[in-house]
Image 1 (cartoon, helix red, strand yellow):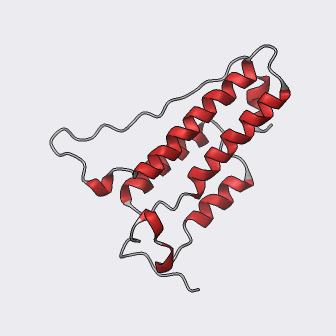
Image 2 (image 1 turned 120 degrees about the vertical axis):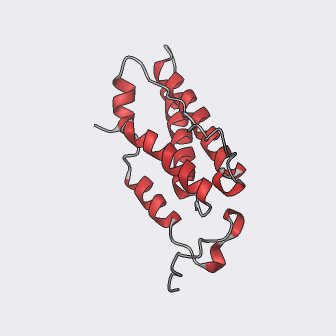
Amino acid sequence: MSRRALLFHSSSAVVASTVAAAAPATEPPRPEQEPSSELRALIEAHKTKYVVFGKAIHEMGGSSRDYDRASRAEEKALLAICAYPAVREGDRWAKARYLLEIEARGELDLPEHMQALLRSTMWDETDRGAAGQPPSDCPKLAG
C-alpha cells in the first residue's frame, strides 16, 4: 500500500516535526556545520505542505481536487529536498536527518525519490552553484 493510500485511509495523520539535534554546549557549531538557508527553506516548505496535505485528507467535505492539489504540492516539496545537492557538511547532515525521519514514517517510497537523491550526488566542478565547493576528498566525475 502506498503512503498516500495509507494516509488517506487512516483515521488520523501524524504530523511529525523535525527535532533538531542538540549542539554541544561547550562549542558553538561552525558555519559549515549549519545547513544553508536554501535547504532550511526547502525543509520548512515541505513541513508546511505536509501539514496542508494532512488537513486535506481529514477535512470533512473536502474535495478530491483539494486532496490532489495538496498531495502534488507535498510531493513536489519532498522531491525538491531529495534533489538538493547537499555539498556542505551541514547540508548533508540536515538533509540526511530529515529524509531519514520521512523514511521512518514509510513516506520515502516512490522511485522518483531515489532517482532525485541519486542525481543530487552527481556533480562535478562545474556544478557548484549555490551549494558551495565539493569536499576535497570527493572524486571528480568523468564527463
